[in-house]
Length: 217
Image (cartoon, rainbow, N blue to C red):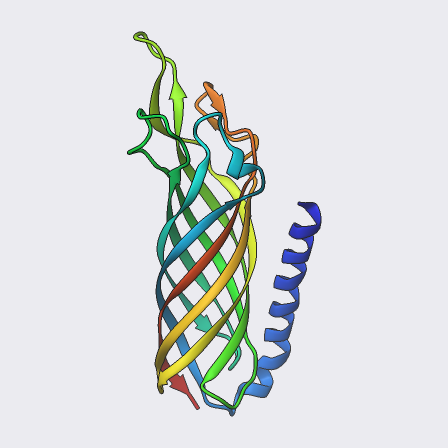
């Protein structure tokens, strides 16, 4: 986990340094001002998260989100994104068959588009933010335990990803990307009743539509 965090932070630092160095070189080159992205896809629980709870193991689920950022150079953007993921529950227990686990994930991102002469543009991505877990949990009450979807404290999250963008017009196109995300949820709590117990590691696949806004010359 520490190595992954270190690599993520190193990648963000390198990209920001590249942005600072390249800014002067781009003063006379046409570049877009901003990007706006809408996406959907699915999230896959990984590591200890896939075995969370005796009868409450998360299964693959759906996600949706959006992001918006500004171009600092012709190849580098940074901005904000938000992803909502709803996981199923891998259980035969009738009491939880219609329940879900959820993650609400606001993040800052940095993206580096690899230079290319074609309409197909691969890119690298780094994110850091928070994950708000709202997971179905067995909660005791006066009538005995029952399953409820409870909100755990927010946890630091970070990740890396790769993707590819394809221009279908001068200022828009479609993309697909894969991200590996780690949330430090192991010690976060629901009030003083329960501790989450594991780090929430996920593999997220996104596909969607991206619009490029304006240009500088």
